[in-house]
Image 1 (cartoon, rainbow, N blue to C red):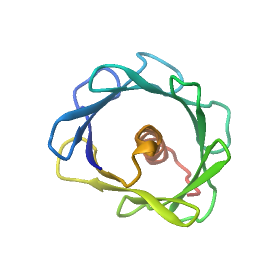
Image 2: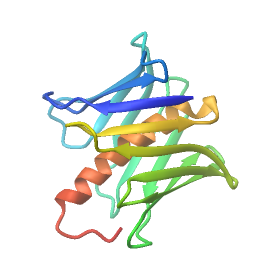
Image 3: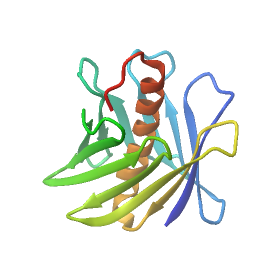
Length: 166
């Protein structure tokens, strides 16, 4: 399934709208208002919560935890190396999804056991951040959408820091 995720530009808190390939609203994500750590609620088009996303504070490199209403949890960790690309590991149950990205082109690929399950492409055609998201296995929708939001937060934090090792 193909989605387009757009960050709302004029909002008091971080907010995303995700539309499907037919330009119908599929998901929304909104951050908590005035929170020290980044946290979001991801909802489907019926306003039903499908994931809670929260940043773990006091980590050397960024970490985010995702929880869905069934109690399933996932943990996203950013790697130190390689220096000129972004690499993450997403731990979900006994599965480990590898995410590799090009920091210059903002292209990311999600792989599980060597098979690509999703791809992200960041577009620069609007005032706000816009991502094209292709998910090849529907059961990963909530995980991939949660991860895209977390990666966006990490990218913006890295741009605002004075020292970034990858």
